[in-house]
Length: 261
Image (cartoon, rainbow, N blue to C red; front, top):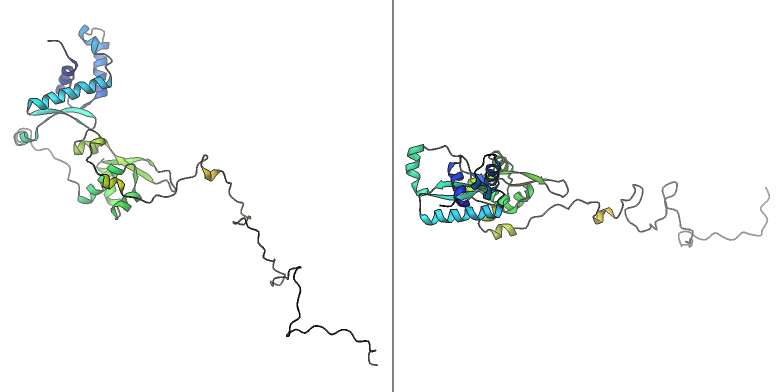
């Protein structure tokens, strides 16, 4: 029987002590063909493309699924492995013993993790807007368990930290990739209020230089007269003082001589 690529991959995964990614499988194929005393049948499988390997693995997985065996081939968090069917769990627990599993996530933990998974990268403030409660303690627990991690900083005022899920999150829920998450359009559409974006050299904010400290904030010219020395406003030169009833006009000078002293 001629050797096929999918059966080589099956033998490697069956003997592996841990899940193997496509890159790791490809490396084994290349190293085997590059050895000095490599058998000639190994040469055709050197430098296989990622697409070819993925197609062979998917075909192998479908064949095991159709055969109805007690195990199947699955891809979890980007790595391939053989796993037993859940219905054979009672006998396996007796044979290998019950392994300690991490404690289940609380309801707040699941809700916070869902927001991170569907809205990532997301800041803590955005998570709190969606959930309506503080999430400091829950976020610390999720980080300790390796389900979320810091993935960068948001380009907004204050540059808050952003969070995303990790490969451990995919393993915890048995997902091959984030694209396998159930649809949650309603959660994705919940609006959040974000701070203003930071001004960059290319942005419009850089085109207008800041005003000096002694320049008024407004571009309009003030028409207010400057104060006098004693604090009272001076009268504009264009204004004239009109006599009023309270302040009678000064009488004209008299032609009579002054009285004798």
